[in-house]
Picture 1 (tube, rainbow, N blue to C red):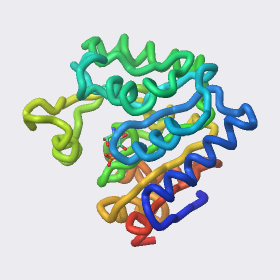
Picture 2 (cartoon, rainbow, N blue to C red):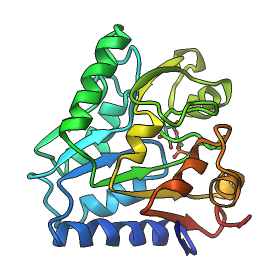
Picture 3 (cartoon, protein in one colour):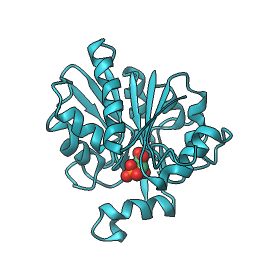
Picture 4 (cartoon, helix red, strand yellow):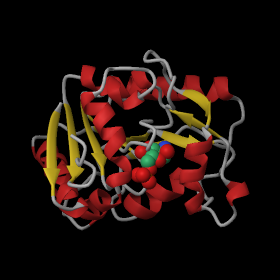
Length: 234
Ligand code: GLP
């Protein structure tokens, strides 16, 4: 794993942007794997303000809540629209279909999409408990797209985005650990001291199902981009 630490989240995001920019310049970014959450917002902002053109690229998102329509402001689809796609439209953008309750159908279809669009660069954030995408602790490393029941800690962490905590969805569809590990390159972003312990375990801890991020130690091309606070326990 390559570790880059910058003073602030904005400076760290600029380092991640440099990687995206360089891959685009070399024409090595046909398929980009995208993440939601507050962590990649600064990177997306820098992409929006750049002159990069994604109209020949495909995007695949890590996850989507079950039960939310793309037009629901809390859906990850809407999030991406607002923070990236309105300014930088991709040729095509895929999400697991949160409106379809048939998990078998949704996950089979998404795995097919991922097989047809191998990811050149996956952007990742990390949960405080070490989850990546919505792969909570205990998720098998050979998992592909699946439906998950979110843990209480993840539901609480995400409640800040909802007016009423009861509205936070309890289930999501997520790419699995194997789907993430299949990406050619990965950038893991983490900012703030709330992420420091998850980063310590991900980078220096044993590779264990209990810390899903730790599996990234086995990937040949991961860059971990941190601010000083998130790097505080390394
Ligand atoms: C959610 C998302 C993850 C994200 C995590 C951290 O659970 N599914 O992809 O990494 O939140 O969110 P944040 O970046 O807001 O801390």
